[in-house]
Image (cartoon, rainbow, N blue to C red):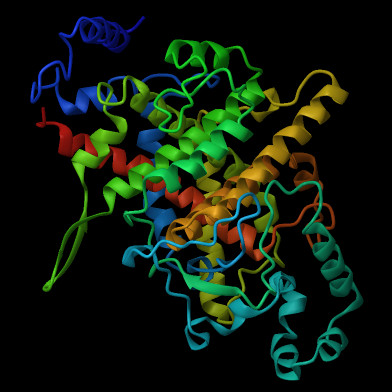
Length: 470
C-alpha cells in the first residue's frame, strides 16, 4: 500500500467518524490540490511494463507538437459525419438548445475539392482520373475512367465497410444527412451539456457494455439504483478478477471518459459578456472531476486509465506504418504539393511512435485456446460496436460529433492491433485487399489520438496551475 493509498484510507476513516473532509462546511481539504489529483498518477501502469513519466516525456516533448501540427492540415481537419441519425436504443429526439452545443458544418466552397472525392482516391493511379471523374457527374462515367485493378479495389473496400474486422458502426458518408465539419472551427470544449441526460449516455456505456454484472455498481454512479453493492472496493475486486481483455476494455472506456473530462475542464467558458467570450482552464472543474478526496479516490484511477488508453493507441500508431509507407498511398485533397507534405509529416510521426521504448504488448490479448479467444474477441468487438451506436443518442451535437469521432478512432486503433498479420503481408504496390482503412477511419484515428495526446499535455498544465492551490 502506497503513501496515497494510506492517506486515502485515513481520510475514509475520519469521514466515517464525521471528522474528515466535509464534516464541517468550508473546512479545507488536506494537502495541496496538485497532490490530491496526481499523487497516484505516477510509476508503472497495471497490465503494462510502462510508466507514467516515460509517457509524459515522450508525448509532451516529442509527439504532441508534431501531431498537433499534422491535425491542422486540410486532410485531417475535415471530417464527414451524420449528426442527424436517430438514437437506436431509446425514443429521444430532443437536442440540446445550448448555444455552445451547436455544430457549424462546412459550406461546399469551404471543403477542399479532393476531400469530397471517394475513398478509392488513395492510390496514385486512381487519383490520375480525379478531374475526369468529377466532371462527368455520372456513375457510369466514373467507372469508365478506372482501371480494372482500381475497380476491384473499390469493390473490396465497399464490402469491407461491413466486415467483421470493424469495431464501429460507421456513418454512411453518402447519406444526404452527412456533412463535412471543420474540426478546428468546432473544437471539443465545455458546452454546458450535463445532468441526467448526459449521465444516461455514460450509464448505458458502462452498465450495459463493460461486462459488468448489475449486482456490482460503479463508484460515484449518479444513476445507481441502490440495490447493488456500491462499495468501491468490491467493484475493483470484481475488476481485478476479470480476464485481461475485459479489464482492458473497461480501462479504455474509463480512459476515454477521463480524456473528455480533461478537455471540458481545459477549454471552459470562463467569461461570456458583450465584449466577447473567454475560454481557458477551470481548475475547480478539474478538481471536481479528479481530486482524490472530492471523488472518493476515483479521480486518480481514471487518470491512470487515460495513460493506458494512450499506450493502446500509440501501439496502433506504430503498427500501421507499413500501410501508409506504400509509395502509391496518398492523403488526397487535390493539392499535390500540400498532400505530399502532409504524408511526409504523417510518416515522420509514425516513425517517431516506433521509437517509443516501452510499447504495450498486445499479444497478451486473446491468447490461449483459439476457439475461446475468437469468441472473446467477437464479444469484445460487438460491445465496442454497440458503444459507437450509443453516440447517436447524445443530445449535444458538438458532444455527439467528438464522441462519434473518438469512438471511431479508438475502434480503428483496435482494428489495427488485431490485423497485424494482414498489415505485415500487404503488397508494396497496388491495392491491399486484406487490410484497408477508409478516409473516415484515418481522420478519426489520428484526431482521436490527438485528443488523448492533448489530454496528457493538459495534465502538465493543470499540475502547474494546482501547485499552489489548497
